[in-house]
Length: 81
Image 1 (cartoon, rainbow, N blue to C red):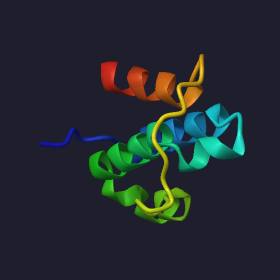
Image 2: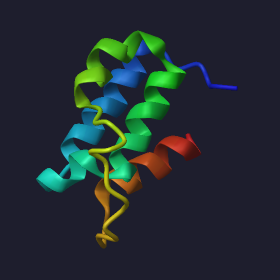
Image 3: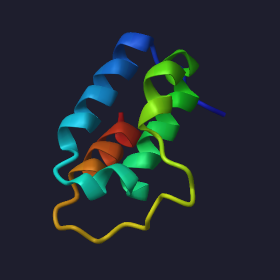
Image 4: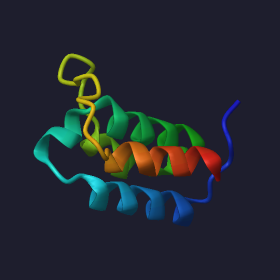
């Protein structure tokens, strides 16, 4: 079951995620990609915004273990909301 997320709040989370991507590698990291997928599931209206930011599973890499990992921190905060 997915949680309902208003489009304005979904856009805010996407904006926070964009700001958290400190390195180019962040965009293909499972940490960032997982939040994009979750926001899209929780608010299907974001598909046009999220789609271009997503990478294929072949282009995605596992977490590199960055300390800190800003995208993972944003995702954890999203899950706690």
